[in-house]
Image 1 (cartoon, one colour):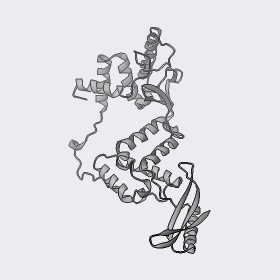
Image 2 (spheres, one colour; image 1 turned 45 degrees about the vertical axis):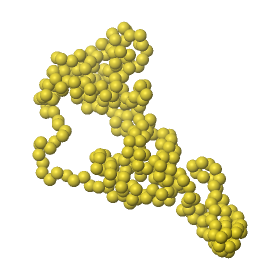
Image 3 (cartoon, one colour; image 1 turned 135 degrees about the horizontal axis):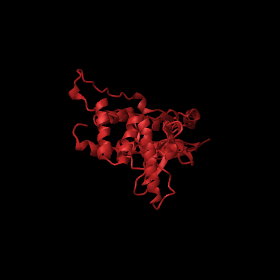
Image 4 (cartoon, rainbow, N blue to C red; image 1 turned 135 degrees about the vertical axis):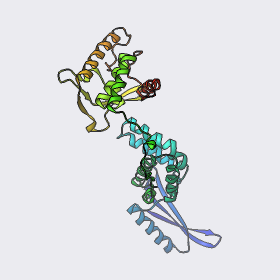
Length: 320
């Protein structure tokens, strides 16, 4: 619907048109747009028809001042309805660390491909995972298009810088080391001799099953199948605000059953016996029966604990 009005300007009589555009997808309030400066009513009517046609096709945008940060806040709430909390926290962390400091106060309709290209170029000189940040930025712009806040995705025109590879291979250039079979055997023997049985069991389970530390921390004693001598992996550990949460594994393929070698199986059975004694002497015996509980409160370990323990072991011997 459009309404027309004649008014007096410095240049003489002119016409303006006010057009109703329905509800704003972000605020839920009715919105309208005004165009002025027409010499005749017919000119105003032509302009109104063009605007209404664009609006019906979803290609017309009112001149609003919605910031990038406002769209991010709405988008992350929407994402939270379909993604795990751990994933949401990861996304939020990426935006707060690098993306929001660059884009937050910009009006999202005015963000161009040049803005995005400059952001990616700057970020690529700082971190190697810059493409992942670009992917998250792209997802937010897609959301804004779906909500009819913008009509075009500026990330569509961004060229990712290539990472130059070294031409000649050299062992001295390697930053990541791997252990040979003999080194692994020696490491576990030292762990068995020098660490507590729980610490030794932790490293043996990680090394002989290949599970992730989050999966290790989430293991319950009931995940050990004594008949089939196997370990069921169907959840992962996540900590938020000093409280632990057990989440399903990231993908369906991550849910699996792992056969145990004889010694690892025996180690885990012995660990269960130690845990039983631990619970009998504890004030909180009703907590889930974690396979690797903290001796202080029977809760699962912090996710940083295996890395800290490994660093401590390796510092004792430069061999590892």
